[in-house]
Length: 343
Image 1 (cartoon, rainbow, N blue to C red):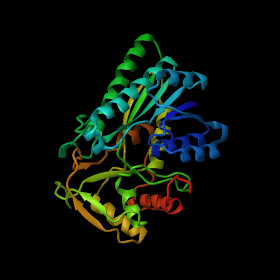
Image 2: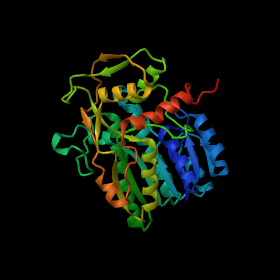
Image 3: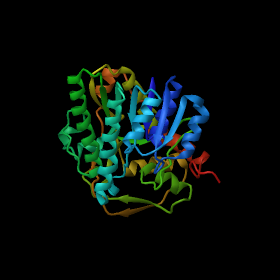
């Protein structure tokens, strides 16, 4: 396949590009490098050679995006490009709707006009909002009722894809899509070629590892009074390599006109304190902690029921031990203490 990957210089997108190239596909990366890493693109091109192309651009530039798709004869799209900080989305909601929802509309429009047959959308468990106990672990039939603009911007994109696919079917156009609603992504490429390098960093495990490396003084635990066993938020952590394997399995399985949605997680949740203790075990460092207030938009507990993707695609996460997931991230941080930046 000739696959266009938006956000391919980012954490998840770059790992997806690597896996696609390893599977023999040709990949065109599109990224504006606002939060992506040029160093990740350089790494990918050193591995994939002429099977990895790169266009630095914003996906909201619809005309240029369409020209790129036609020039590269794109037949499939993986759409990762998005802003993805829950707290930031609460502070700057319109920026998130503009970047995520308007950006997705541009990608969908270009894909349809270019005759793209398969479209994989990077959705999120945040689209489920705060499910009640009766919906845990969360399966795909759980009502989608997001509680923050980030989750809403992703859900709007799912709606757009459903409507666009229905209209394409009426025209006789073969357009299939899948929304992968994944949970908290962690870890790094086992060979330390790629890893997690956000600016700024807001994810729990990388922050713990930055404390272990002496880059931060302490981990701030945002809220210790949630209705969970230890009072801290619970999340389902899926390894980034497993997540991109799910993307590959999905895009290769999609048939013309199909619409699919899958949760991607391991089916077990870990609290903030459990993650902190695991990071202490893996790194051998004490990792000081301090308490802070709850962050707006943070649900108490989000864990996946991954049975649908297991049943339909035969996909099952290989990394199910939290320490093992963190170990791959720790190796990346040790090998690349400054991330993709070159001294």
